[in-house]
Image (cartoon, rainbow, N blue to C red):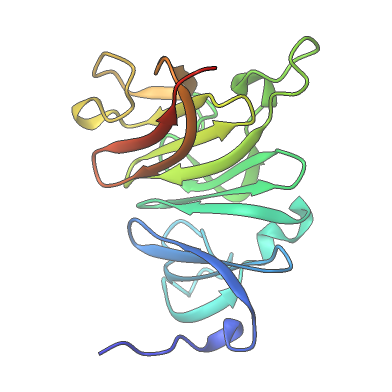
Length: 194
């Protein structure tokens, strides 16, 4: 039977929840992040004796990131998008920061150039996130889709089965509007380029 979630979100206006694996994130209307569930890789709090959180707490490590506008939670990692278009990842997995960074208790920003933002494309910025169990996806303001992580069954959409350590653009041939992901798949809602 459904039960109302209490904890630190009891009096908050929650605008989004995200969870694909062992932990759940919630985002309120003020851009603050809350979480509960597995904390094995310090996704939710740096307190070492708290492996499992049964009720939501404020995820303090996200406070310095600015106003958060989107969230994603995978098997052992979390991601947040701030209002300036910065994508931050933490936890354990192929986080998008290369083969040498697979674990972080603090949010680390993925370089914006990996999502196509540069001097000539300054209007390109990340606008949304999605997460599977072991992979992540990001949408940009130009309708481009980027994916990275474990490529189980080709779920990243790059035409091969290799894992991807950095965000890589998916050649869909259409304008991506939304993205969702599951254990080993990614789904994109698209419209034709005009």
